[in-house]
Image (tube, rainbow, N blue to C red; front, side):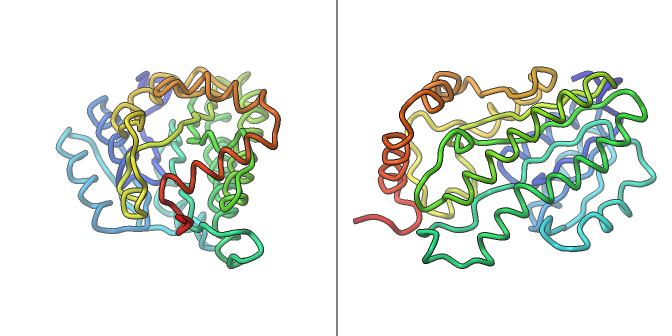
Length: 264
């Protein structure tokens, strides 16, 4: 990691568990000071303590990124430091139901987390990076971005928003020395997915491997499809296949994974 370009501070949204924790550890060992954001205080502080063991400064903020005052609270924590790297790793799915049977407020939470909160952080930190003429923005995406899917239609749609947004932002900030990449991943073994009862297959990615790959490709925007588990081939196929069969296959896959209470 180029600390001169992306340092001295990195903000990691979703920096407490899974890939966020791995990212924090890797960046700390590279000498980056960290601001870690997450809702769960316990895992957040545990990750922070491990990172401090590498000799860097770490600030934590227990923050709900969907809260109306989110950005105001965050800027109070970061306005006195120079943030050269923004990693937006937040955006897990919070619901699983046919759209017309689901809770509209839950859908809105998914939209806010994957769109408006993401925009707010990119706008704030991206503007400062442009003024300095250096920096990087790493947005975690999902292969859900390439197709609609039953039972998680809002999640897929919000992920598609992020990918298209990243493409435009990449173009706008590139002349100012700021890298932007939407790093698209597939199934990954995380505490959150384990808690939801996901059945992990042999091709499931490990957080450590995903974190390492993501940091290696910050400059490879606007979109980089993870190569772990045949990611690039998957992205091409999802984009090229007729839409009906793709959506049907997605629905059957979700049932087989045992998610969303759809087992028959």
